[in-house]
Image (cartoon, rainbow, N blue to C red):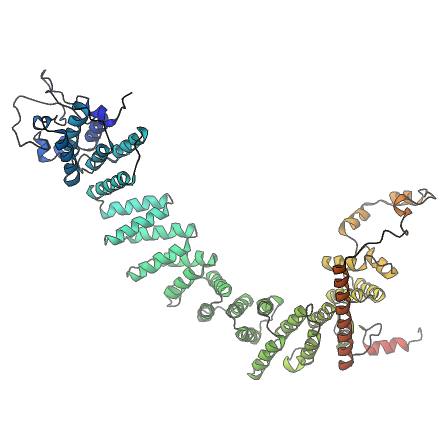
Length: 633
């Protein structure tokens, strides 16, 4: 079955008709539906080259038009007689030379009509490729016809090799270069349309093409692109475009600078924020609000940019805006993130000098840095001593954060308790403030983590001697420390002291108390475990929902004499569990480790001379003597 192609269809159809009953001359033809439509659609007869206007072909010379002949629409001329008698090999060679040197749609179609329509030459890839090249004709070439030809080749089983595809790409590029170029305004409108459709990659590609053509980008288009990119948080591209704009010597509006600074700092984008700040705020061209400055400080603190943090601080001071607690904390975090712990402590001392009280959040960044960098507590304490030598007044929170570092390290190194207590003894020489309950809570927690009960009782006596009033956290630490040591009675007494102060343990403390009391038959452990303030929230809620009638009904319920099934085998020894050699070895190793720890703690206690714990350690000694001499005793 013969293949129906654009070539065959086009070459076998008539395309010229005259007015006045004059029939078309013999041998006339056209390129076919696709080609004739393309030529009528894209170009008018007046736009044809001079040879085509005169009805000439690739091998004839100019002739005069016959008078009295009028066409309704000018059609492509037919096959010239000079080509009809040429050899097929000559026509094939002429076709290749023509499409290589000066490709024309009409000239190529004339040769192909003779080869395919008249001489029935089978269409091959070279013929399609000649038609593809011919469509680079600036007057009659059509990308749509190229697309149809490529689709037809695939449909008819022709392989689209690299040469054919490169030919198609080359002619599309040639067509683009030969088209009527856009004006500068046209380029701007095209880019604006792409930006509105959020096709930023294409818009940026067009802008780069405009710059290569030395076509300046107007300010309104550049600002429009920046606003849209900021909306989609493409701040890397925003920074690049603004740097390029500044390097080219163009100005941007103040509103644009402030907007970019606002959104970039809110998104914590360091590069864009730093660029806008250095270009405009540092030179005092714009004056952002305090909220924007606070966001810029956040960027500096997250990235460790101490220069940016110092610049923001200078700007706030110059504009008579006092630095707040949050501002000092962000500046401290910036120094710590940059690795300068000493400068972080110095900022906190300046904050204390400005009569701003430090809070627990003020030293959070310092503690995090010390934990991550494994900073020695002695090294941090030496930094505070250096600041003390420079006539700085050391706030108590700075000393407390060093003790909190000891507290963190105590769980892995029990000997850090000695270092922590040594630093505590130097506290009054370093800070003018008296130690508060937070200092002692940190010390007791350190002792609890190291499972050093004697050191914990030493801290408790210090609190009683100095008259420091404990809080709920203090009692929680003491209760858990006593439970770790197996002293359930003292733990229960501390728990009663906690309740006497109308305080309740935290959820974490309740969970830990339940875990430590589980499995113990001690009466104080049982009382602690099942106390209403210690039991699970679900159990307490169910107990609160019970009505008195339900409780009374439960009291008179008959109890069977036989033991319930779940208690029948309660005291019967179960099967003996077999232990492997590796498990037995690991258990022995753990026991030896615990023994070495107990010996080390005992040796440290003897060296420090801690006193043995006495009941009522939280009560001052004078009050204990007064109670002992009272008549009721």
